[in-house]
Image (tube, rainbow, N blue to C red; front, side, top):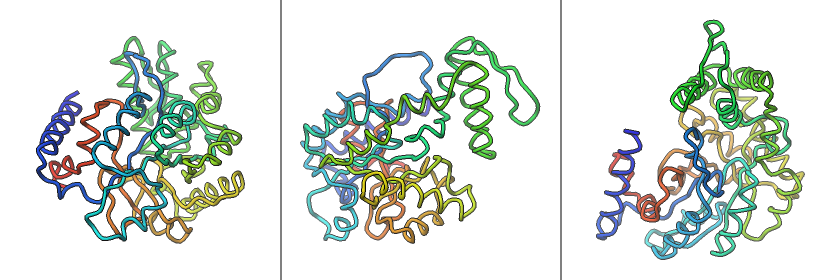
Length: 338
């Protein structure tokens, strides 16, 4: 809560500064936005993935605000050419949606159509095929349904009581730490086993949430939509051997090309943090023919760095129109000293 309060304060201050016309130079040439789920809000006391979802109403408000602020909506694969243009032109906004959730076509697409805004959906092969689980979604369901669980975080089996939201949040954070700090595939496999022991099938959750091949093919035919690569398993590439990271990236692109007939020019690194995606992955993306590769690190795109581009998150905790203006302004980055 302290962190969220600080972010809100920074966004409010940035919006006020931007509204006065100060620090215009912070805006840069444009902005790439990160989204995940777009769907109506359901209020729950325990919602560990709430930051990954926004409402269709807020997406519509964001597009209206950006239009009012003078932004043009562009395809992500246009960025190399746009960033090569002289500075001082009309700023651009590109929209990206990670993981390929069904609500992207059900709720987000009509909003993008209303505004004529192109967008890119990054597809994880294992999610789309239902062969891999989405661990953070599995974990949310498990902790919501179970009264208690037992799990070995590396020091023997432990009992975790789940009597209320506070204990559920603590358990979620422990699992997330375990998965990110050790062997990710083994950690997810252990979580999937625990879920099945509690009557939950993780791959069913993925199939319910994510677009399958037929939906992805239909989306790819839409003039505003493009599909980008997002690996096979959604593991942190920087923690994999280079050969395995290359396979994750290349096979993801092969999958989209085989399904749609179009080889994707863009890729999003899973998680997208400095720990999950490094300069090695940027070099791999270039060698594999991706013209644009994006992280989740906050920032505005700059010329010459299209293999490791930052994005600004439209976060479920901060669904106010003025925060969209604040994020696009680049002023929050200056406040953070970036």
